Image 1 (spheres, rainbow, N blue to C red):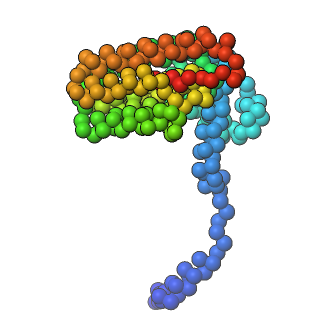
Image 2: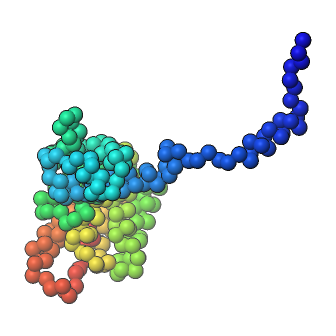
Length: 281
């Protein structure tokens, strides 16, 4: 009877050594550049998304063929397919067999998606869009301030106070005033303890950045009366006074919206060298 072949430990080690000297298998298309591919897909989706929301590809229109779009954006069919998938998930486009890919009507767009909001704000929005953002803020933030006054915790109160402290510190343009103001409002949403309200932070942030961008571009200061209004909101929340917290937030939003309206009315008369007054919101 033939003996079964036995491998000595030294023989197995030799096999492993030979295997380790074999040239590595070339990277396949699947493994090659995975991270850069994901980044390029996201960049392509952002470019297409901006073009759609800004009307380069009008609502209701068919997008050009995949070949045309690939040539236009120097993108592969795979990258284009991934980008379309992202945009479809945001409600911007829909694909139909034997018809093509169509831009959906604006009513179907997911305007609550942070990317869609950012793309919409990549160029100056019209007055109706700004009005709608402030209307949303008026519906959400006074209620949030009221709830924060009753649901605050030491940690959430410290975050609101810290943001206000940075607003005071940076009021003359010595630091990130915009970031501090945004944090102040987002901290109030978080202080409500309501996860759904906190989830609206992206909307509030977009509205704030819209205000900053189109009412005090280039400015980095805050009006004293606006700073005092923020201080009043903080004081009411700290004191556990829900009604004053709501009332002071309403006052701030109304005055901030009035600032924006006056700015747009006067902008056409302003010269390029005219200084712009900071309008924190």
